[in-house]
Image (cartoon, rainbow, N blue to C red; front, side):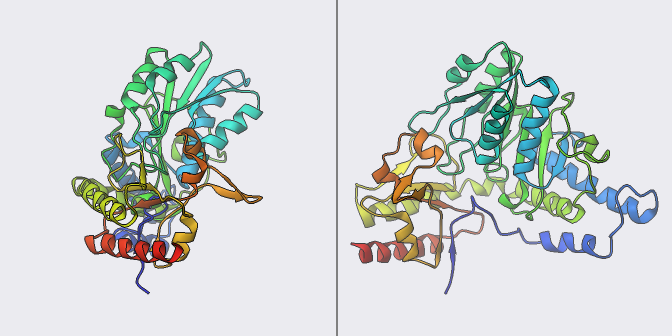
Length: 377
């Protein structure tokens, strides 16, 4: 059975060369990067080279990059680190959007449980956060705003530069979860205007178990993991050396292939046309009228279950959202935020394309879905 992989928003295959770059640091170069002798020094230099590669991809400086275990930890470090540093008595105010990944949403809710104030700003029907709604939510005690760069379900790209300008005019810091955008579209911290940016290695061709947080020079965070002076004092413990090297390799590869990633929009639109021919005008696209990731397509199949369709096309790897609870569909936060009716949300499938996706993959996906659709109808 030949797999058609259209779930790159969940995880990506490692880019060629990542494993080979990592292998020496799993055996031969096993030294501790803090050790003063040659074996340790070589490992330290490899980690710092990886840090520089990540910084170049983001348009940052090497000392602004902190390695973490992944995007979730990086987002937690950003949010906890700011709130605990600048509002240690749980008296501060935090703003997030209604479409955040659980890495941000659940962290914000937990801080609310601890006594911090939380405001959740909504979106329009395309999943876009209005900068004016952020401006209206900012208060005198607002410490941090966290708005994702691109949505993990429907691909909407947020107007971060405008939102950042609003925040900075009020002296408020801004963090963005860029796990879906780094390596897929140009993601430069200066252009976005953000103070903190988190992302994950395995979402952009790197290994699992590694991520990074950009912290703008001059911003001091409270450490999330204590136990040593590693990662500029922000993350205690011996770093995942092989993972960092792999992430650095993937970051350099991503920088080279960014122009080609824009071509995914043509394949995405090809799949949209194929599905429209199969289903007809009743099929609908989420976030189809705003700027979105070039490789993300969220489609609502009418009078069908997305899960049932994918079960009948086991060769096709794609994603559904929401979950069934006592025979009722509970919509995902993004589906709720854009006002998607339950009958449409039931048929939602997200297809996310990657660097290795071909026209043949798209055409095969269309044929598999046609067969599944005919079987159900």
